[in-house]
Length: 556
Image (cartoon, rainbow, N blue to C red; front, side):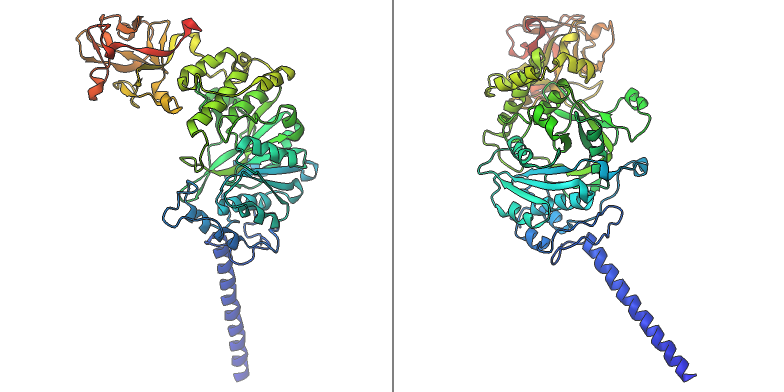
């Protein structure tokens, strides 16, 4: 009896010991996944995120935590150097799991990796946070079939510390190229593409996280048609907390006449035409940071415009070029990649942010937009007269490729973009010196006022876009200026535009804008006191009644 009790106690002790060891081991795994460090030597991914990890190795000689801690930090301001929360980024494991944000039907799709082309992943950066850069690389290796990623080509655009890039070459498949001076995104990407050894190029930003099975659907579309340029749905990584947030699967890229990129929801008819949520979405424009393209097609199309500087506008140029020269742009819903979106650029522009963006977008307009470039200048009057370099080579490329007209692009790719000249007599900002008529963010029946013309700083606010139409309305989108009474000092307000509505009809008399029903003129004198724009007795000598549109369609 005593021997049986002793045996039972031994078995119980062994069970308790095994149970405690199991808890300790599990806790270590969890802390490693969600904790604050890549402690020790990062040698092999253990497959803890089993649904997403392919188990590739960072190499036995690479210490992720030492690499991250060796980067530059400002203990007083975690946002200063990178425009995101560096302290939070550094806490997060480079191999953290992320939520699968795809539509559930995507998981049922199967791809034969052995039949897909290999790709070279090209990542350019300048003074990137080491933790963000490492997490980008790690996610690519972890969540891609090993046989599909031939190499990761890093192009260090003259960062302050060459070791930001060089140390990463200890990771298998990672190569490092370094510019001898600051070149910018376009020339750096061309350098990476020229050095790549795969038939397909995958461009990524340096602060991304690839999601589950992100690569296969992109490569499949390019394999089927090499003229397709395909982009994943770009999920959001919070710049503050680094939380991974799924983006809508019903968005596509668009823009306005100032060449300002925007995400826009699919129309109801576009949604109805899609039989399956996994189907690719044709998009007039890509954001530009993340896309896959056949290398020979990229070369034939003229790569990037390498006369563009630093960053900005290149996505317009390549999007117009792809569509107008025989290709297409698609967003692939079953491919997801997270991206850290920031509120400002953390790096400097030698000629200033606004001047650089204007130069780049002006090159795009002059080469690809034909006479429609006049609308760009109307929306961005500060671009007029600004230097943009020689574009003869790009014009010759367009002719050589026998590319279509911008009118074709508007008719067949982006018919939703309103063409001002189709119904407008004058268009753009409605301004007095450096002050512009502004909706102030109001909706009908809100008043309008005056604000500093934002185009002075290289941007044209959508709240400052107006048109004088052939129907004698002063229009902002679907809203029109209106006045109710013939009493001087009456506030002007917004209403929904309607045909034959007398209270919203205006006409030009030289630089005056007269309300036809009352005979009074649009006046900003009260707006200067913060009271809104009014109608007053017409007086062509009053500066507050002198109005100018940035584009007169009659003079095109």
